[in-house]
Length: 220
Image (tube, rainbow, N blue to C red; front, side, top):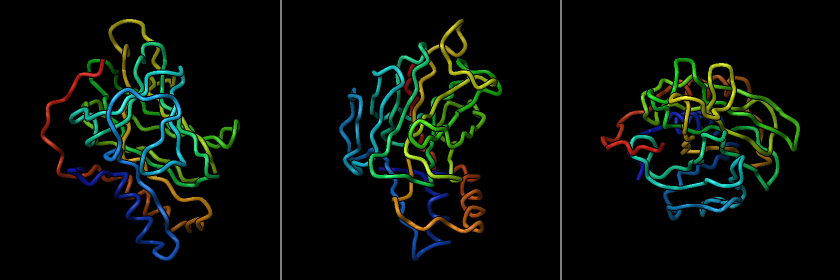
């Protein structure tokens, strides 16, 4: 059960309020899925049109990681080798995507380190955005994209220069991406007007409320 209103949920709510007749959004929170190590191409029981992979071909895992996730979350292990999460839509292009991210452990990050979301249409990159980690080791930040059609994406933790963590010293070794509350539009829905984008941006600015008081589980 989710115990807080995530910024991703706030962005989705803004979309629906601005476009009640045409808004169609799906949010994956993974609460209906069995925890454990996952195979490549995993899809949530709640939506079969989005499959998840890792850049290295192994390391997907689902579980409850305390304050580093919001209930059950999805992660990619073995990040000392530069692993990260990839999502592929099999149901056509999309135009809205947001997700919460966590595990920005201050001991394994530096000021300015980023969560980077890159979206593609086939092999062509459509766009990229990033959020600077607040480094509090709590899932209380959201990243999103809504300015073009795409059918696959990657989410990676990087240094301030945008390079994916690949090890080298104590800092940035084993920093594992954890994502949750993945919200996206259903294909063939009407693209929102500019006023809707403004409301969605306001939604992204929210950091949520009612954070759970749970012991963080080390992921490194």
